[in-house]
Length: 334
Length: 280
Image (cartoon, rainbow over all chains, first blue to last red; front, top):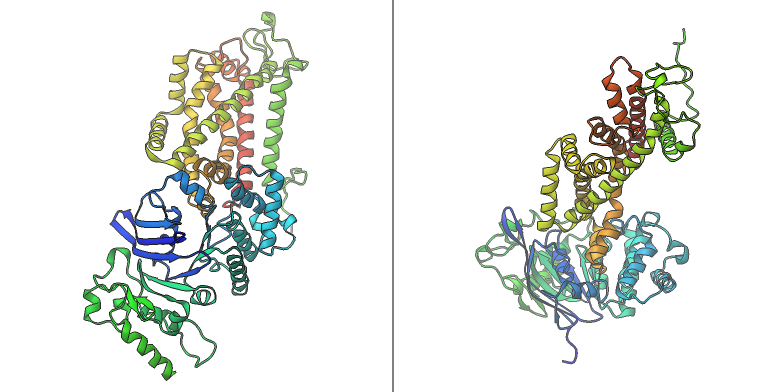
């Protein structure tokens, strides 16, 4: 092995001390990401996906306890000094936030904020150089008239333009790893597609490893190479994107796929998943999805299934083998 | 139908909301100009004219003369030279010291933050005038010492206000975004948190100018601020209070204090309406 992997997360656990005791939001998550690869991290809100990815950047509040191992290019980030983390953040690892309105400082112009990002990682840049680079970056994300928009404040930008600017800021220092936390959730559907195009083009052009956090399987289908599905703090299925859509190996994934609105086929009620995810304090002893799972058996409620290889994928379900077959059966019926 | 008679006050195109602000600004402008230039005004020289002592208000002495025959109007106008700069100095110093300590306490928390807030609690547990008296008395009389005493009494209010602001603003997403961009803690605090925290501090400061003028006068009144020959408003009221039948001696400086405090309150209210989106 010549170069260490871009990102290698092993047994990541994040817990928060609260009045109700220590609650585990992420319970042993493994993630791998290679340079130039797109990994989709999918799950409902509260599944721990955002917490897991913020842990990688060291952005969790001090009361969060993070254990396990996060290796970036072979370097362990857990326990790295604040100085070292500061150099990485915004430099080699960048983050795109969900809501570009709240993620920009309302008191500074868009240009000032992108310039700050550049300046924080290269003190030698002159004022004129910073400005030129910023205009270039706005051009890169197809913002029209960048040299005049650079002096505008965030509230003068539309939602889509703001998210473009956010992407420009994130890629300002040519990061190797980009974490996008629901980058299109706060946007109109029509704008979403444009933003994803911009993101995909940049990811390819700059050969960025992209961790795309979303609850929208449609976004994943169009962009990701591999997908990790999270439920209640754990990865329940990990698969190549085509395998995931063709033959989901976990009932939760299957339920998620069933709840996507489709254009073709019979129109009826949208499928939904009954119940809600367990609270952090009240996870059942067995499989966390068992209470909502249509196929749960006695073993599901007593024994937690481990993530294990099934076909080309990995699934954490006692009945993963049967599941693939059943899906094909279901598809044949349809 | 009979139109109900209505008193018409000329408002010069200003609405009910902006009229008090304009009046307040006018009053403040007058006293600031007085504080800066009163030496050059054609006023009665502040010499003792015992022959014309204790005269009631007249065409010659609009606000009468005091026990030493000095013109009360002249002395009241000269008083601005002390009250206005002291109010500015005390409010600015208290706001800067308080805001800085409050911001550090709110942003970093920890033992130091808790220590600052306990000190604030202790200071605010005293009635302000009592603590100011104690500090001023231990430093000795004089306007400078009174100013120091007032800063000691006043900074905790700003510390508490600023801390509350910082605690709220630091949870906003753009602050996390700044950290994610690689900004250090001090840069995050001074560039991304503090600029969004100033509004209530500024409104409060404007309101406090009046209060500080009042407290300074109170300290001088009880003999802990300006010493006798100084035409400071509180000291002058103290003079006047000794001879109750010569009401005009205290009336001039009393009126000055009233007008200044009211002016600052009007402007403070207007500023709050302008800056705080929660009020109409």
